[in-house]
Length: 292
Image (cartoon, rainbow, N blue to C red; front, top):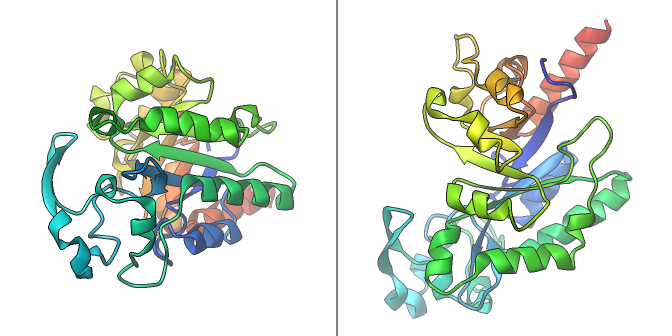
């Protein structure tokens, strides 16, 4: 491993390989499986509550389509350049969202407040800070419809004392990070908070300007194939990012030990995983081999 510290294992939306994503039980399971940090996505409701959803469209992860009382709210919107048809969090109050269920289990929608409390409680129990990566979804869109997600996020983090979270020796990533694919938003946040920022990227690695990203963010979040594809040598993106002073968190591991090992060998600083016990086991095996 080329990093100066042990790479982090980050539970991507909890442990969705085993339990419904963004559910409280999914996050709790990820913690029991030994993750260093959790990852979540935030969107907003009509009444300004930040809830944990991968997207603001609800039909993939809830039973909203079966609620006749909400049938008239089905609509088509263009969000971040993509056309969506369905039901959207910004058209529902939080109490209305609580009336929805998940298609596969009784897993109520939870808020960012709830997750922050879980992280704080778990940190006290462990005697060390559990990290948290918060991805803000479509911040420019939400601002355009009068829902100031940035202000709500910063106020919520301040209420929880997040600005005072400190990193641990040897684990500089063990804290709260803010991240987004929205470059304009990440640039804006560099002037509004001292929290570390991740520029998420989804393009060919040769098109990623690490030196430029380093002027406003502290890490990049590329998809795993941008760093290393199966059966191939590392692309060099991780090394280039490190030369620019950036950390590298890759998404999203869905396979087993070998995939994790390949990425650790490529020098990443952390991995987002749907099955977080697998990269945890890979790191344990690597450590055992190094001490043998």
